[in-house]
Image 1 (cartoon, one colour):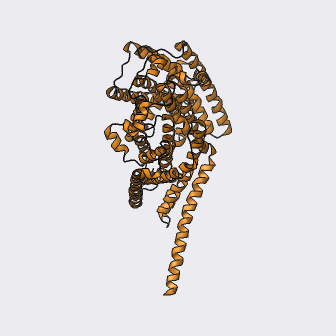
Image 2 (cartoon, chains in turn blue, yellow):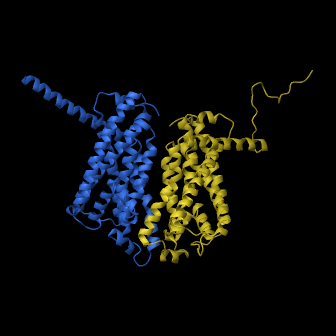
Image 3 (spheres, rainbow over the protein chains, first blue to last red):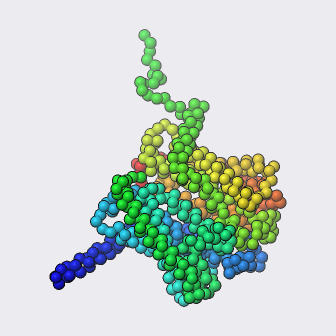
Amino acid sequence: MKRMKIIGADLQQSSLRSNLLIVWSEIVKNLKFLLAYPVVFIFWAIFPIFWFIPFILQGLALVGGDTPWQSESFALIAGTPEFIPFVVLGAILNSFVLTSLYGMGESIRREAYRGTLDYILSSPCNKAFILIGKALSESISSTIFAISQLAICVLFFGIQLTLGIIIPVIFIIILLILGLYGMALILAAVSLKYKQAHDLAHTAEYVFGIFAPVRYPLASLPLWGQIIGKLLPLTYALIAVRSIMLLKNSLTALYLEILILLVIDAAVIFLGFYLFNWMEERTKKSGTISHF
Amino acid sequence: MEKPNKKRSRTGEVKCPTGFTWANMKAESRAIWESNIKAWKLDLAYPISFVRQCLSPLIFLLPFLIYGLAVIGGRYSEHLEELVGTGDMVTFIFTGYIIMGFIGTAVWAMGFSIRREQWFGTLESLYVTPTSRLSLVLGMALHSTMHQSLGTAIEFAAIYLMFGITLQMQGVLPALVIFALMMLALYGFGILISALSLLLKEGWIISEGLHSIIMILSPVTYPLIVLPNIAQQLSKALPTAPALIGMRTFLIENYTPEVISNVFLHLLALDAAWILFGIFIFYLTDRYIRKRGTLGKY
């Protein structure tokens, strides 16, 4: 009996090790792909900055006066007159949305293009660990890109960073990433069945771009738009990060936003894994895994 | 006995028109049209994607307008009026943004026309036909211009209903002439990018990068005057800056051009320069790729 227990414990340990090996292998594989295309790496590290420069120039052209970087009207709805750091922080956090939707959301579809999806889905391992590996590798690359963009913004756009700010901001970004990967899992699940993940990712990007407070406060939207915005994890992450970095609020003052973010994370991650398993079973039964 | 006619075609040989002849022009026009029809058929085969693409010009414009409203607390900006004579932010940005989709025509649709054929596995088959490679690119340009016009019409209707915009109707015709001149230069630019995508394969980075740089250097959502001097000088090499200034002069009441120049002559010079440069680079790349034997490589 004792011997059986020892064998059981050994099996559990080796199963855990195997699963961790799957996660590790997936991370290494994806990072190798990323580093194989250095131009793509440099592009994501620098070019997202070019996408928000028109907003900064537009703001300067519209406001003008002695302090063209401050707007009183903006302060009434955003709590801060400084629209440049507001836009910069929005864009950096939004880059996590883009990489998660196009990276993680399309990761399953990419395996189909490479001809490796059939092998992955027919392997005897737990698919959840493959997805965790993909999510972690995407998180690593997204964070590297965000850090490089932030460094450029600290140098050129007057973003202030102190050690006291960094830790709560990292905590909020982790919560944001969890929610985004839950949503990306839902996308990956749908792409297993309906194949064209790209259109879904684009549509999700449009929803985030308009209804989340990336470039303007939520209060600028009509009421129905604000309701949609409040269902997105990015909204709470942006409110929290801007409160800490621009309004100098402490993390404890933001307990409500963090709580809502946690609830959204739990809901979308659960739904993501459930949908993925369900779609995987359905696709395997229908025999359409390698269909394009 | 009748002498054998050396000029007569051999059995099964198809004689193709070549050079600057009427027959060849007709044949190439047909190839452009068929390429356009093929692109439409592919588009309409994915209706959800088609609808999304038609709505995307509006979706990309809305954040600029909502942001503008948030920054100035309304649609009129005193500072914008000081700079260009009109303070109506919505009309100013809308008249600028309608051309952004057409920049996409040049950098994305034309740039990727050849790369797309490579993905479909039809590039080599097309290359052995006697049709000019440029006809393929121009067919895609025609399709994309038509598609983009549809998206712009939707964008115009939605913005008119949401915000209401006032344009000078008598200025529409000259604005369209300026727009046509701008498109010619953009086609030259698109031909250049399609050559680059032949050479660099993963040309999406070039397209995305150039699209972002053109957006910054063009007075789409702000007057050119807010850019640093060096950027203002660089924008003169792009057709979008003079075209936007010219179009706004005719379409917006009281608009004062931020840069004074003869827009028509400026655009004609850019048309000639970009088209000649684009075609020259395209033929150089085409020859280089075929010599290297890398046409089918990814």
